[in-house]
Image (cartoon, rainbow, N blue to C red; front, side, top):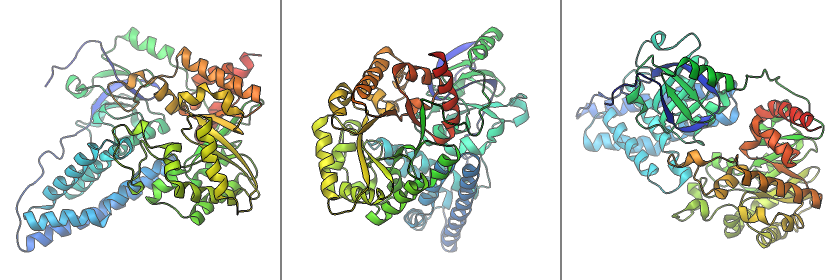
Length: 544
């Protein structure tokens, strides 16, 4: 073990959730399951162990359901779906059957069988060359820990007495990996920051931390070896910097530069000259969008409906979801992004062949062109939805004019026998080749939206989920803003709507730059609509 650090020392990590926090370290007890009982069984002992397994599955499932309810009430429906997915894995009969079979054939106790089976699942999935599936490996690790905690009557805990570490304003949790359970199980009201060795920007836990407004930094190797409980620590979740034992002037300087936390009203009225719409992933999120006064749905990530269902939905099932959103928005714009499948959302039922580099492979528009049956089913559901509503169809990962015209042609051919209302056809600007052809594309599209997440990744050739290079995932560079200005100019010249729907639009600090670049429409998470409107009002006032 490394010697503990006792003087001011800075580390550069991966910023997961913005904000600055100063407090005392609390180390997670990650050794509570290190001395699990391992023994052989026979005769009646085999069935007794299988009974213990069944009981553990039942109790762990009930705890996951309670956690889902808690997260849905305190944070939101999309975040709570994380625990729905874990419960589906936990209660899959195939998993229990495999664990029970190991008990029977190896004559081992339930703890040993659970550890072996779930460790093997986690290792195999983590090794897959597919970002979406490999990221789910941690779900199997969490399920294993939950089952073992039930069997051993243990629970997620800290290494020491909570009162020893935490100061009056809360504690900073330091752990090996940021997981969804860690994020919400350890009294988030008393947790002011997370620092971990592992965890990606788009992991489930990072999404939860951002939703709760808790600063988080990952990607600091062996950080647990350098600190002890009670050590003072400064965490900058915006820059990714972590400082152990910071000097008083270091703390004062950091807190002085931190933006004061603004009291944001639950709802803010629309701002003249700047439209703020909502991003949604499920039809069930529409109520929150309406509550926040969204001026439309700027991005409906339709693929998440089939991600949650773990199968393709029929035309009728898709129509039911889509029309519920259209009716709820009562004539305002709803932009339905066609299934953006592939890369980190390959989906096991898709049958996508293993790819060496899936981010540059069969995804988005290319996949839809290759799976025309999928495209046609969705096209028909959207066409039916357009009756009595304003349907905007957005094509993902378009690379040039010819590709857009080809895929739009398939859409129109699929719906030629269906009575349709008004349908607008647009694209996501997220591939640099399309951005450089913005003027040509605006001649053939009805609207467009800039997807800043993938655009940043492709423009700067940086994998945002790779700890080694994710620090370089930073859009705030002159060439990026020049590209935004060019697209805004092209949209204005063509008199076509242009919006920004990537995560960047939800950060107040970027709103002035978007306004300066000529952007007057964004789409953000429903819970960020109010603060985005406040930031836009200030930015517009500043340029008057």
